[in-house]
Image (tube, rainbow, N blue to C red; front, side, top):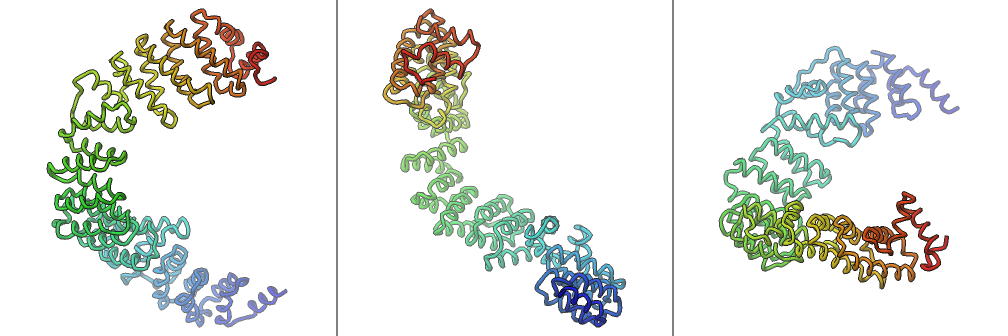
Length: 548
């Protein structure tokens, strides 16, 4: 009833000012807009009220409705307010303002602001670039709105960003001001600062150096700012980095923020100026930035870099530092480090990732092994399994040591590949395979352990080689497995694969211990659950397995 009364009052109202008031009404706003448009020139007395909504309105919907009416009933005098509304930034206001301007017959883009509006709406990037610096601020505003609202805003933001990137030096003052305001307000997103640095990176103007240093000191995108400064130095945009950039980076090395110290160390290393050596050496005392500082030292020009790296590796023994130093020694082709790296390579307890880093560093130094023993360690580091199998018996001790170590890694590292190389070596590797297998089975009788994957790799290779010397050891393992199953039958499923594999090998050599396993597997032509049911049927009384 209440809505009906309001509609009747709207229908009877002839005063356009009273109709404008209903633009704020949640129920009647669309009807009010339609009535004002229908009134045509008779609605012009309400233009001041409509302009107030555009200039002072706090809601986009109200401003958009006012713009629609002005486009239909307004004259040339309302154009400045519509242009101002367009510069508000978001897609809804821009669309309403531009459509209203186009409907005003006498309107033509004359002023710079009007040209920016018309050119942007026509997606004329070249014309915007010609307009130059006056277009920068509105483009930045549209770009900053970005994806806050909808897809149209995101597309407009990308277009604005592309135009700014092509504007060159004319966009620099506006970019600097926008970034400075962003740092001062701390309200803009990290994405805006990152994209600002990307635009500056396409322009490459030395006027951006102070603001980039300020970003490095105060924002969370310190790495992006540092990377751009380094690139500008390498492209000789910054002609005197020792006066402008390097002293500031050295100061940042003393920052309380770890991420800034690390970024500064990386940047100094990329610049490669020996004047930063003293500060970087001091930075290595801080554990949090030790690795990037050491890498940075290794990137400095001169022979001192190799000496510093080797000294740091000896002074601060740790896995991550050693990995970083070894990699940098390889990059530097520091041949003075060959003897140190060879000692690391020959260490049989070395982790596979460390061994690989050492081998790659030696390869970068154009080093080649002179003895078969060094060849084994080198190819093991490179994961060159084919070359290792060709080396034959000389590779067996190192392969066994590596297999033992890989067995301690999550998911066993490269243990399957190492076992396969031992299998390719052939009969000479059988004693080593059996020793490894016995070591892995030893704890299984006290408590179940999860090494069944490792054991299966070895048993599979013994099956491929088919050497009768394995029968005695496999029978011993087989008997102990049966004893274990009698004690803890519920774990039998965990050992099923290796139990079956061993039984098959024993049957191949005529051992009676594996005959019944072989028969069931091949008569039924199955494995898995059906295989377990057959075993329970035949051996249930003696083995006391899980009841059917």
